[in-house]
Image 1 (cartoon, one colour):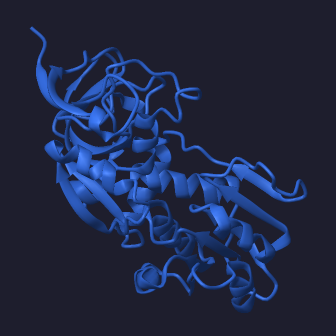
Image 2: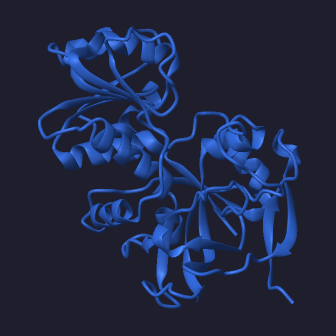
Length: 316
């Protein structure tokens, strides 16, 4: 008889009311895969977007769906040829599979061993679970797509959220000058993370404010907010600067702008680099709230407010 677990599950797209906590079978561990007992799962805006059905034309899916793509936990079992980790090892991962079905809002998950990296030793499971999706998003956006270099200037829109807060820290670790954009109540938080300058997107033009602190313009705009904030910020971009967004797909932008949309991909070697940043003290995760599995609906409702500071995390 298959081993069973508690999980958050939905059988059709729609609102948070579609989610139920059920007892389901633990997925079978196949060749090259690892069974992980989940100690914590990060909650992200994309989890709500997937549940609403906004990505159904882009990502293959199969009901019933267990939401969640972030996790930290302990290796419990290994399939054939999965030998990078021992049973009992503490690991973390961005666990998005090719088909949206088996997520991390559950007591266990089965994941390709190639997705896994060792958990930062100096972090709790809750903190570590808050890194993979947002950390890889920031890393791939600023370093791979944006080619951010030492002594360059980056304008981070949505600097106090999950992606933005790690983006500030990674940009500082790279030696860049960071301008963080968020509401004034989050300015002290962004400064704590390492932002050199902060801008309130309310009651002022973001682009003009950015030009005041960087008269020559910014080398990179990292957009984690979009909307009017993005449109205003374009005036601050250097003629040969780069715009990278995790929300905007480029519609209506001046074709002269060097633009790239980024949708994060699993990458264990980059998770190892993020672990090194964390263990050297250059990367911290602010967990603003934890929820139990039974409170999954509340957690997803909170993330949809778009006013989460740092990260929120589920503890199964």
